[in-house]
Length: 486
Image (cartoon, rainbow, N blue to C red; front, side, top):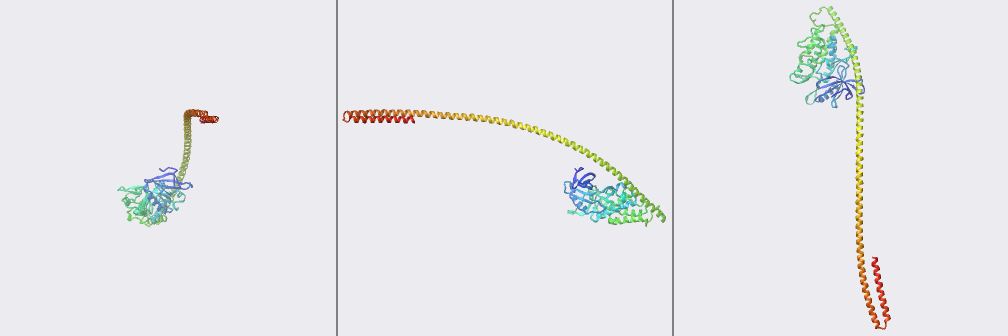
């Protein structure tokens, strides 16, 4: 959807000035050089993008003072566009509706239109939609006149077709405005200006444009389009027969028309020469003067009428320029007011956005506080759980330590009991040994004593017995001390 302020290539759309079946026309300005004003044609139907590419290539070669030039083309952009030259002024239609054209002005306009068409036809481009709306009059004609070069331009060549062929033998065309024939087929052009053969389905060519130029001539002189067997023979001008013959050679079937725009242009120049010189060699129209003096007076009157008509046109153009200036000033004031309103609306939106942002920040801060509270609660819970685990682990450690100590004490007690039992058993064994050795010593003493009694060596035996008893006693005491140390 196109909108004001949207950028298309190097240009910014300013306002919509036209709309057709397959596209829109916008007045645009360069994004840097704001005083460079152009017309942007933007297709709204995707099926014409490829055709737009070829049509733009054809229009690129059209550079003539009487032809609106193509300045830029990009059919592959996000918004495809064709940039055309902008003519500050109006179309031919207001001059026709205001009855402001006489024969001289009509011929001057038609001559420049035919110059542009002749140039285009030589390069294989057919307009297909010649009508007053597509003939643009520069506003400088009010001061420079219609004879100035390039003050009349043919526009909307992009709406026509090229005789150059594309792949598959199809001719390139991009039609923003169109009509429908009896078989329901679409073709370029406007009803009332379309050649009969084109309405019947034939391919438009240069002679189709010449037919529309004949309609244009008739409409400039008679103020309406021809109907049926129309004629210009009734015009109150010495060259009416010449004009009527030109019109009949364009209003006729295709094979009877002028063969080219150059031939039609020669006829127009001849008519202008006849009108300027007053040398009309054709038969006078009924009711006109028949003597040379009357013809001279009528030529002078015609020149006076032409001057008066041109003066009226200039006055009308001057008033239109003033009205246009006032309208532009009003438009500028309106645009300024709208810009201020948009700025105020933008400021309100900015403040609203700031309030929304502040509210969002407050909500984010509250959410962050809640999150931190939750984090603190979770940290406290984790700390409490850690303390509980530490206490449980400490209790478990104490219990395990107590169990180990109890087991150690139990083992120590068992060891002590075992040692006491062993020691007691050893002492008992030692006492048994001591008793045995005591008995043995007593027996030895008794034996030695008996033997002594019967022996002469009583003293020696007694000493030996004492030594043996002492040794046995010492051995018993030493064994008991060793057992206690264990």
